[in-house]
Length: 210
Figure: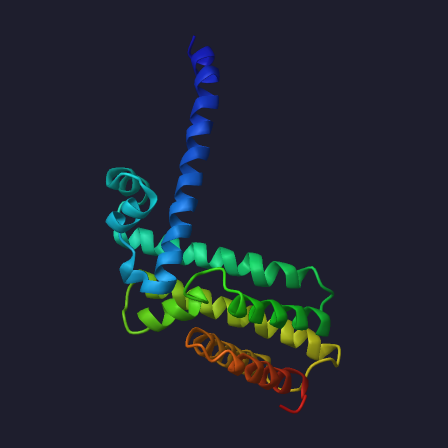
């Protein structure tokens, strides 16, 4: 009898889990949209309930606290970046081709932003860089992992003689700083600065005069 009940209930339970996961993903994605414009501090259970036409209790059940919601927004921002920038680059051959796709997709992520406030990571890190806690830790880990990934790809291109010499970690840091500045300029309406940033990145990575 218990086996029959379990077999009957299992699909229902699975559907609820899937529905819950989808709801969490949709809420987290909207939280990232809000945070890109108003900051992670602008993310609250009440705000998202109003925006999405959901109950506060429903969102609270899924996330539990404002901090958990902010952390979910950080993860959502990361997932979008991986989808738009990293995954397309990994489909290219390693070396210069992959590095160029990576840079092209990164600049496209700025010029044609998925988030209304531009690059989520840049906005969130600026907001939380002096606020110790789990949210800053998550942002710091994401930034460190991204720069490490970029350094590895630079190193692969260097090994093939297809990138400028230098410590890959330092080059990655420099490139990240330049592209972050380009994002800020773009958000301020100085879109011409994006072209300047691309020229600087070309010089850093491939030795092309800016």
